[in-house]
Length: 107
Image 1 (cartoon, helix red, strand yellow):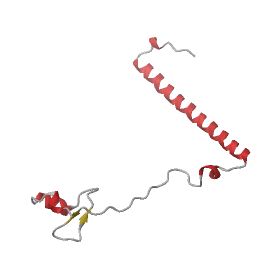
Image 2: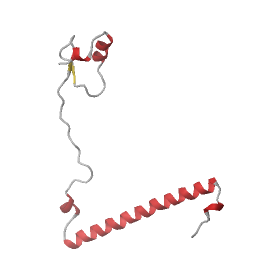
Image 3: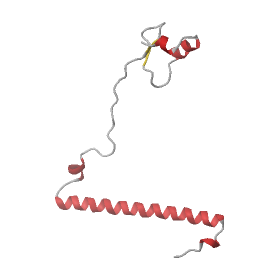
Image 4: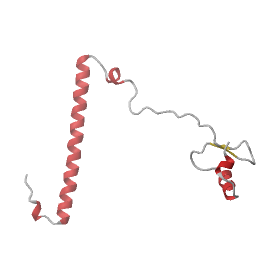
């Protein structure tokens, strides 16, 4: 199917592009499905399961993050600390507004 794009106006050309992109995505999805079927057939023919080859977890493995040591301490209440990550606590902002510097609050 040949389309003479020189005779298309702006709207028709945009419509053609969007239809082509939709079709391209459909073809890609079809190819992925066929490849997945081939892989499962090969695994079955060899006597293995997907989990035997790739492990039992599907998807991304969640990474656990450890705790971070505090970098700043509230001089008015030493029990309040902040690691320097994330949103600043109110006491930290209040101390900065009162004229203190970050190094004054550092542990």
